[in-house]
Length: 273
Image (cartoon, rainbow, N blue to C red; front, side, top):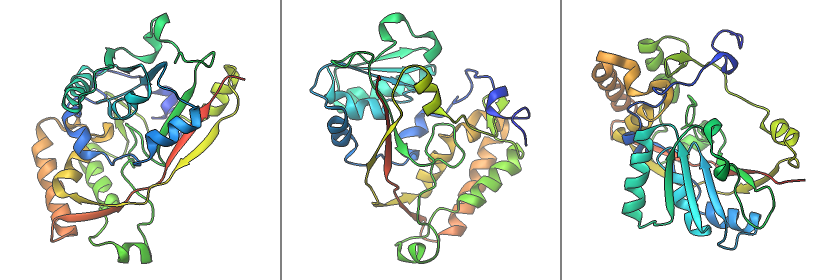
């Protein structure tokens, strides 16, 4: 299917993209590597000064994880429900130097357009396991699910392909994104940053590889935390979809437990030339 027919270039953002997903996010999403903050601090030479600007912060998972490395952390997201969840989590975790701004990146005021620290022009890191993204269909798929690896896991891996097939049975073959369709994702970030005056990306690996246990509730939350299967897309059939999903998962693992080996995280860092 071409980019003109459901590709990201023709897709337009709208406020319903993650409608109803915020309360499922923390339970549903896979955790970041335990060493993420330490590796980022070493890679950027952080010394507790400056401001962290997390664009598209969702419920603030990354901003809250890294806030102690900066004087101030600012989470930016256009979804008010996500920011309300971020504020709640900040309170639960005792993070007092984080603020939350309900805006799209294109609407940033001048005072927030960079990550000011001792490096002029700021630093732009992106963190996440391969395949992870707030809107991606396959954001929860982890490495090493086939053959010998699956045999070593204490429980079966999640039946990802069957879950996607179930979603398509309800919502059609195209990948839904808010009120539109987005069958492809943007790429070429390095070219964009280089054109803006940054040096080529530097890649830093944050090792993981932990095996985590996931329940049926966790996998249902994972699905509802993703934009292609956000709760609002199912309309009056959301309870029916959830019931079918739970039956599928129960059939895939009689114990109701699943195992996932977490992939390494990848930091892509652009610095001014």
